[in-house]
Image 1: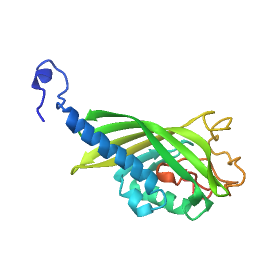
Image 2: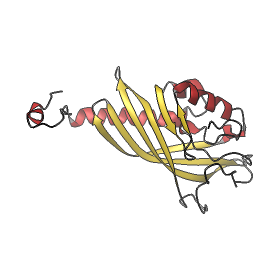
Image 3: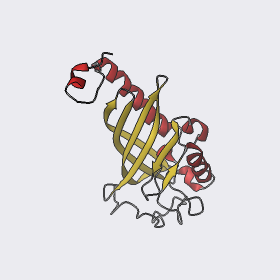
Image 4: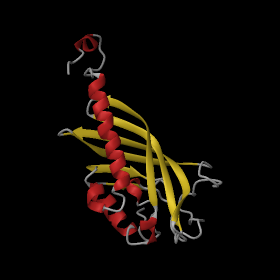
Length: 194
C-alpha cells in the first residue's frame, strides 16, 4: 500500500490508500468474525479468541464489561442457566474502515428464544463492532448493542434494561434482558455485572 503524502503536505492526516481488493478481502474476514461470534455463542473459549484482550462491551441494558476475562466470566455464568438456549443471529449492514487496521461494523442482532422445538424472535438490537487488525487477524475491540423498539415480530418493544423478560415458555422468567454478542444473550440477575 502507498501512503498519500500529498494529504500530509496540506495538514491532513496521513491515510494509506487501499485497493478495492484489499478492502473486499478485509470485509470478508470481518464478516467471518461476525459469523463466528454467532457460531461460537455456546463455546466460551472459541468466542473469547475473537475478542481483543482489552475489549469493551456495552450491552442493551447499558452494562459495560471491560476485558476479555470479564466477558468470559459473564458468558460462563449465563451458559449455566436456561439462557444457554437463547440464540442470536447477526446481520452485517456495513463495514467502514477508519484505518487499514481499524474497522467499524454496523449491523443488526436478532435475539431468538426457544419455544418448544422452534425458535421465536424476542427482539432486535443495533449492533456495532469496532475491530482491530493485528498479525493479519481481525479481533473485536468494542461492542455496542442498542435495542430497537418494536421491530421484533409481534413485540411491542425491546426489553427494558433490567426488567424481567416477559417472554413465557422459554424458561427465561426472571432473566434480565441483556443482549451480548456471541449469543449468551441474556444474563440472569445473579450474573449481571454492574
